[in-house]
Length: 377
Image (cartoon, rainbow, N blue to C red; front, side, top):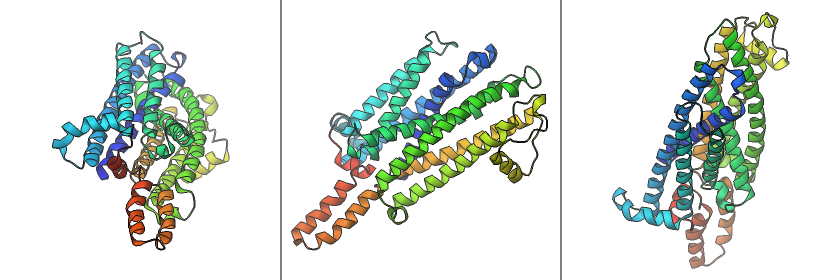
């Protein structure tokens, strides 16, 4: 379970970095906002991050396939030669896995088209973004949302949920770790102002993503938990509460960036001594026990540091999400507990069959149970 959680978490980190970086390139960065040298530097850094993300998702997908195959076959590494073909050909997980690897192969090909600097095919970045979102769909098709089937509302909502957190978290990584080192200090105040214009564009997009993320997350929680008591009586519920707490931390940091740091910018003469203009900014200023800094470069560094902390909180949310996939949903456990009293009135043989069959049925998409059953493709 620990190894599967780690693999799922690394896969989510790689996927969010991939989707968020491509979305940042396609939707936020414009040639008019940066100089030619800065665009080239940013493109080069982003391509390296994109390549690393693709490799990470491929490696974690291979590891996940090996683990699930070993569980399905109840064998060892030596049995993979005979078990792997059967898993790939005869199970739902195998079919989705093949689709994921195929999409990642296409993404690698698109990456090669953009390897030499400015893309020879301008549409390749957009095509890569579409392909990355389809890779996210394969994640939803192997999770709890697929309990209802592949073409269902829970799968669609879970897919949107994963996409918006990818754009949000991956954009934070790109803004904090990729864009900032790409900006050249050509003159006093120029670099902070360029960062300011891009940060404001991303802030608006991130606010929309956070809204959709909360709405889809509440829907997913309602579908998987179904009532309030399982939140404090099941491992799934406690993990979900931990995830919600981490989401709260991320939102607080997002509010700090949006309502405290951004109002301090741009760093021209008009910003000298100007405090944040809204009450959230004033509260943040009091908590930080500092006045509005008029040094553009210093505020820029503080803003980037805060963005990186927000990204770390988002990574924590992804870790809780990965752990959630290892527990049977709370609605399964509650339904099983509700049926147990009725089994007492059955015959001994019937009760034994019920106890033997019910957990396997209701824990179908718990990784170990899914691996044992091997949902037909």
